[in-house]
Structures are given as structure tokens and as C-alpha cells.
Amino acid sequence: MNSKVRKNILNALFLIALLGITIWVIFKDQDLGVIWKTLTGIAPVFLLSGLVLVVLYVCSESVIIKYLLHTVQIKAPLFNCIRYSFVGFFYSCITPSATGGQPMQIYYMKKQNIDIPTATIILMLVTIEYKFVLVFVGLALVLFGQGLVQTLTAEVQFFLYLGIALNVFCVAFMSLLVFLPGTAKFLILKGFDLLKKIHLMKEKNHRTERLENSMDIYRKASVFLKNNKLAIFNTTLISFVQRFFLFFITYVVYRSFGLHAESAVTITILQAVISISVDMLPLPGGMGISEGLYLRIFAPIFGGMTAATASLLVSRGFSYYVLIIISGIIAFITHLTVKDDETNQKEKERGKS
Image (cartoon, rainbow, N blue to C red; front, side):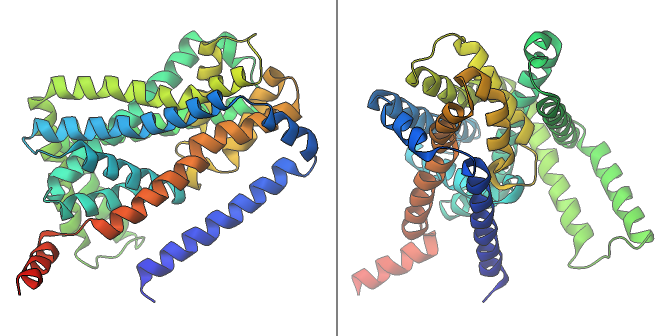
């Protein structure tokens, strides 16, 4: 068994164990009969709306990828970009801190004649825009929405501020790499040398060389940004729309319960609080923390813990678990159907013989 297969199995086991613990914590004190009765009363139109929003959320990233590829004169069918997005979301959902998504996207993009440096730059820009939206919403909430923030419990506020801080650091670090690649390269290499001197890291597998090569990717991204400011602006706007497709699912669930006291803006922003809080935590999909924060935030709004738990099953079900199922199926089909040029050429030759 190679290391990659072993790692995937361990990730799957960790995900299953975390899911089991999450389910037990959520339902151990709940009346399952009441929750089931509540769920069966939801009109199918609301469930369909949730499904549509999830699909739009993923496909919005596909539009961004296609737009950026078109900017560098790479013609990629939207269908292929949709597959890249679903593959990325699947592996992001099942790996800690969403670290597995982009490597798999790059893998399949390379199979379809998109070179690795270009794919890396495109996906890095997508990530920066994705994080930037969370930072913008989080800072706007802290600066202009203290009335809403103060209604949250101290525990929720702690995770909110922690999430904002982590995302600000991430965006600032990535921006440094992109906008000041020379300075970033100098600081990172000096830091690496320091770690070697104090014996916290060893020079092996050409680490310094690989680090310098990765810095070249950021230098190229810097050039891309300077030459394509309009494309970056437009795709950032699309990223805002994309994120709010997902946040809005909770408002659809809220209305499906026959509730209307809170506005769409309030419910959507409260869901954004959860996403900001858990985005950088080292848990697959923020599992466990997301559910806990949801119940603490929305129990008063839905009129009690039982109703909030039922709404959680629908909201979180669409925004995470249904997304895993759909993207997992598409990732599996992609794995079976996407072949590199060498494989395609061999199959053509066999067909002629």
C-alpha cells in the first residue's frame, strides 16, 4: 500500500469518526420524533432551492476558473472547469484545512493540457479571492455590525474573531507572496536557513530548490495581476456572489420553517459568521465546530434547540453533506474519464490496429 492510498484511508477514517462524534453530540438529548415530523413538513420547493444554490455555488468557481484561463489565452470548455471545481470541493471537504482540493484540481488540469505553473497561478488567485471575501465580510461586520455581533454568545464571538484573524493573516501572507515576491522570497529563504541552523528543519529532497521554484510561481502571479487587473476585479465580484449563494441556503431553510421575523440579510450574515469562524480550522469542512456554532447562533432564531437542530440537518446537509455526495460522484466519474494525451494516443493506436 503506497503512502498516498494510506493517507486517503486515514483521512476517510478520521472523517467518519468525526462525523460519528458530531452526530452523537447533536442528537444525544434531542427528540428524534419531533425533528422528523418537522423535516417532513418542509415543502419540496425549498429543498429544490437549496440544491440549486449548492450547484450554483460550485459552478460559480467554474466561471472564475474559465475566465482566468481565457485571460491567458487558454481555451477550456466550461464543462471541464465545472469538473475541476467539483473535484476541488470534494477533496477540500474531506481534508483538514481544505488542503487536498487544489493539488487534485492541478492534477486533472495537467491531464487536459493546462501546464502546472499556469494552473497553480490560476487556483492560487481563486483562493486569494475566496479568502478575501471572508476577510471583507468579517471586517465589515466587526466595524459596522457590532449591534449584531453583540447578540452572539462570548464563545461564538471568540471563534468569529479567531477566524477573522486567521483569514487576515492568510490573505496578507499570500498577498505578500504575490505583490512583493522578491521580498517574500528573501524573508522565506532566510527563515528556512534559520530553521536549519537551530535544527528544526533539515535540508533534504532539495527543499531549498523546491522552495525557490515555488517562489517563481508567485513572481509569475504578480506579473499576471499587474497585467490583468480588470480580470481580477471581475472574478473577485463573482467570488462575492459565489459565497453568498452558500450563505443564503440558511435563509431558504428559515423560510421553509414558516418563519419570517428576521430579514434575509440578518440570516445570511449570521451564516457567514459560521463560515468565517471555521474556514481556517484544521478540521474537514469545519465539521463539529460548524454544527456547534450553528446551534448556538440559530436556536433563539428558530424558537428552540429542537427546531434549530432540524434546520441544521437541512442547511448543513445541503452546504456540506450533499455537496460531498455530488462532488464525490463527479470526482469519481472524472477519475474514470479524464485521461492524459499519452493514454489517449495509445488507445487510438490500439483502435487502428
